[in-house]
Length: 302
Image 1 (cartoon, rainbow, N blue to C red):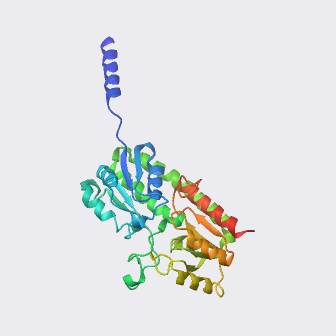
Image 2 (tube, helix red, strand yellow; image 1 turned 135 degrees about the vertical axis):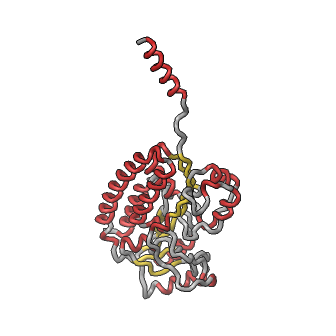
Image 3 (cartoon, rainbow, N blue to C red; image 1 turned 30 degrees about the horizontal axis):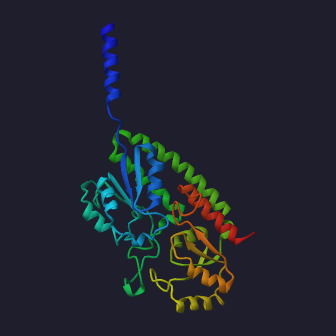
């Protein structure tokens, strides 16, 4: 009996001495995917976002700090569709992380699980920053999060099979909450259907499609080309025949062109978060869409 107790105690001591399973290190190119990884992985993942909501994700530098984070990653999650084409290839090369090479299990492109819109029929760089695979700003429609979440949960389960059941359970719980939230957001958003707006960039195409809003003009003369005085004047003139109700600007964008137009039209300028962390109250994906809708509805009026 005493020997059994001693063996049991020794086993407990040995188990206690074992280090806890290390969390999977997730390198997310954008905040929305870091937030989603945290929802699905909980304490089993350590999610890091390479960018913030106050940065233009097209214009990131492959800094040494990002290289170090990428080198440590077990899984990289990016939007893809060439959104990060200006910096991600350099990061992949310099980090030299065989676990997270494009095409491997350690690399997930969210856009591959979404039906892309605005895919150009002809590629012409004279038309500005045109994305050949379609508009990459998929995170502005919550319905796009659903298939990405399913794919990410399965990828986590594959990389960490010992906890696969936990990832799937967390995904099921998230998916149920998410579908309920979408239904409630769509109910609230009915007054926005048919709303006409101006935006700085074609950031909101997926949001517009979801809510039935209509973009009548952009402040950029071409995608990725900063607003010019001549183009702003043409937008102002165009609004006389194609009126709008508001001007949308993302948190990371220069607000001055929108303010210029607002001063001459009386239209309200509405700052939207664009992604997690863009404004107060958007610390997670649920807050992102809640705040977005509340700001749009407040501007639209009764």
